[in-house]
Length: 276
Ligand SMILES: O=C(O)CCCC[C@@H]1SC[C@@H]2NC(=O)N[C@@H]21
Image (cartoon, rainbow, N blue to C red; front, top):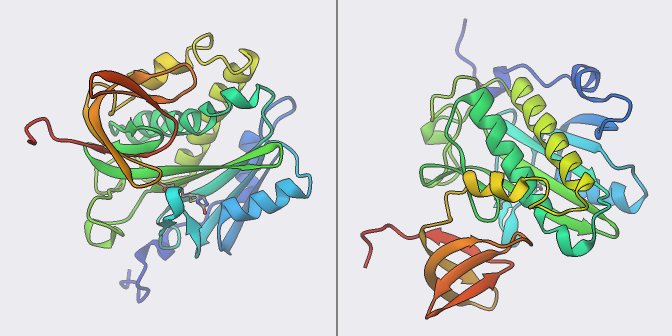
């Protein structure tokens, strides 16, 4: 076969099939109501947020082959060449009280990590709140945005990018990690099935992450708890200490300066054990 003239070799990869995804994942009584695959958009989170305001049903999934204005946490951008990864968002209308909905992005991060471990056979772990790491490199990110009564949760997962194609040196991809599977279709199906399972259990437990085992499963997949961390907090404050746990609300507990701090937001950096 002639080498591709495209700067993105991933354009040679098969597109995701909307029809096949709907056949596999949309069923009566299930969470997913409709899966839409678009060739190109600005941001799947922005699109689903708009749909949510217009009254779209719970369980809408929007997948983009190419996203040109992907949004990340804390005002960052998410860059991914076409078909090089998974970029999708889901629309949820959770019943549990707002005070417990902080678990939603953690739940989605856990689902993505479980799917990557199972299908990709890569040891993905979670940096609080919901970055997927392999070692210390970032494989995927999750962005949750509240829209009226709904929550839109977006996932960006690097799949087939080679080392020289990664957007930043601290990133990785399933291809770089020599995953058992770099086919986006089974990966997407696995992530959506995992989200559905965790979301159903969490909803049935009224959002109680202890009662449904979510907190225990999250802690087992955590790369942060037990580590020394530096947390950049809103307002340019920084806290350095030991990540002692995740509380029943999904907040990070950091032991520092002789007491425990409960953090609901922030950017965590894992500090090397031998660092001064
Ligand atoms: O790590 C982060 O900062 C979160 C990144 C989230 C990126 C995904 S890609 C699909 C969805 N649409 C967006 O605009 N962002 C999320």
